[in-house]
Amino acid sequence: MTASLTGRGWEARDAGTGTIVVFNGDWTARDGPLDLAVAARVLEVAGTRPIGFDASRLGRWDSSLLVFLSLLRQQAAERGATFDQAGLPTGARELLDLLPGKVLPSIAALPRAMLLERVGRASAAGWAESAAVVTLVGDSILRTGAAVRGRARMRGVDLVACMYDTGLAALPIVTIVNVLVGAILAFVGAVQLKRFGADIYVANLVGVAVVREMAAVMTAIVLAGRTGGAYAAEIATMQASEEIDALSAIGIPVEDYLVLPRVCALTAMTPLLYLYGSAVGVLGGFVVGIGMLDLSARSFSAQLVAAVSGSQIVFGFLKSIAFGALIAIVGCRIGLKAGRSATAVGRAATTAVVVGIVGVIALDALFAVCANAVGF
Image (tube, rainbow, N blue to C red; front, side, top):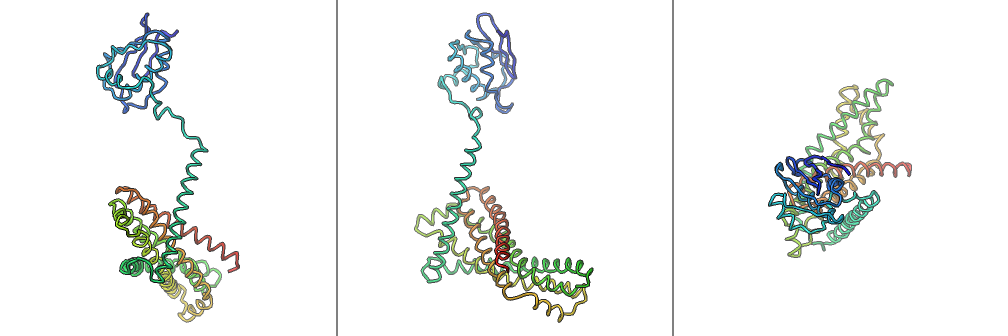
């Protein structure tokens, strides 16, 4: 049998007729996590003999000491050893008397969830979220059809305000981004095409790249950061201030009042912004082509018209519609499921921007795969 045993903050000594547990220093949660095997180690010295305590050198203590004493009392009772708490501080004895003889294991003692359980929970949460998103999309489509027939309970002033915020108010940033993108494409193309004496094809490069891809994608990314995040923040703020609960209580459908105007506005304005972004993007490439390559305006325009077909414009237009609907649905859904705190509002805005941008890029990749499959 071991005569004594020492650990952090305690020492178990063999006192002949029993075992004395001497406490040293502080026993607080701040000093570090409690080793739940301490009680079993003390019983290695005590065996079935009485266990007493010496708290003369004990400093500050909190629930960590109580957890240790409770576990030691429980395990001592299981072995038939006497638990003498006379040497403990008065407060510790009183609190220990309030605890049941058999305590539940602490959270730290519980085994960690198995991988299969975690995967199952994540799958169930993902399935529930997917079902909620599909429901929101279906409701938006049905309510949009009802709005077209004049049967939706959506205020026209809300739709106009959302269209202004999404469209006209976004023109400056859409202009800057698309002009610079067109100019960068022309600059990079000019550097490479000059080597082959194919300077004139800069117009083809700018026209196809801007109209088919960059105008739609860059405009959608701008709207995801500017409008999608704003939608999520606005609705999350209403969720935190219980305005949405008040709307539901008085019988105003949240989908018609909050979601539908935003979805309709962003879906309608994104393709228009795409057409505008295509025009200013080509203008940026035109300026670089004329300034750097000494191309004439007539030759640049002729190459541009020959390279860009109407089908490519329609393709970009359709993509922009899908991008706008995606950004609006994402922003509204994340705002509706946000928590009721200021932190939740900021988290909702950030999540909406990230998910919107990633979703736009993923959807664009899907469009590219489909276009390649049909030979477009």
